[in-house]
Length: 277
Image (cartoon, rainbow, N blue to C red; front, side, top):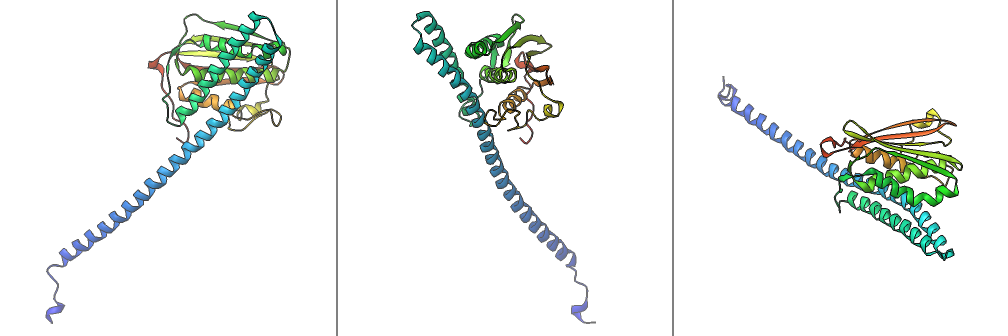
C-alpha cells in the first residue's frame, strides 16, 4: 500500500475546518439578507409614514372645508348686519372655528413627527358645545334641533383637538343625513373607566351592507363631490389610538346612532395597535 493511500490522521480536523467554512458562509449570507431586510423595512416604514400623512392631509382638507364654509357664512352675516351684538357673537363663532382649524393642523404636524400628541384631562361637554356653536347657523337654516344630555364632572383623558374633530365629523354627517327638519341628540355619560359619547340622529339611516364599510378609507354613501370617505376613517383611527371602541346602529328610514368610548383617566388609556403598524 502506498503512503498516499493511508487514511490521514488529520481528516477529522479537515472536516471541522470545512464545517466552519460552511458556517461562516452561511453566517455571511444570513447577515447580508438581514441587512437587506433592514433596508427594506426602513423603506416600508418611510412609505407607511408618507401614506399616513397623505391620509391625514386628506382628512385635514375635509374638515377644514367644513369649517371654512361656516366661517364664510358668518363673514357674510357680519357684512350685512349693523347690530354690534350680533357681530360680536358671530366673531366668537369665527374664533372657535379658527381655533379648531389650528388644532386640526397640529394633528397633521404630530403625525409628521414635528409635535407630540397633547393628551390631557378635558371636559368633553365644552368641546361639544364649541362644535355646536360653530355649526349653529347651518343647523338653524336646515331646521335641525340639537338636544344635549351631559353628566356632571365628566373628563376624558386624550387629545381635545382630536375629540373636536370627531364631533365635527359626526355632526356634519348627521346634518347631511337629515337634510332638513330633524333632530340630533348628544349624550355624554360615565361607563366604568370610560366615557361614553353617543350621537343620535333622525336621518335617512344606512342599510346593513354599508355598516361594515363605513370606516373604510374613501368609502362614502354621499353623492359624488359631496363626500370624501375620510371623516369616519379618521374617527376610527382616533378612537383606536386612544384605546377606545365604537358601536354603530342604523336602519334605513330610522336614523343612526354612533356610540364611542374613550378613557376617563390616564390609567385607563391603553392604545391598541393599528393594523399594519
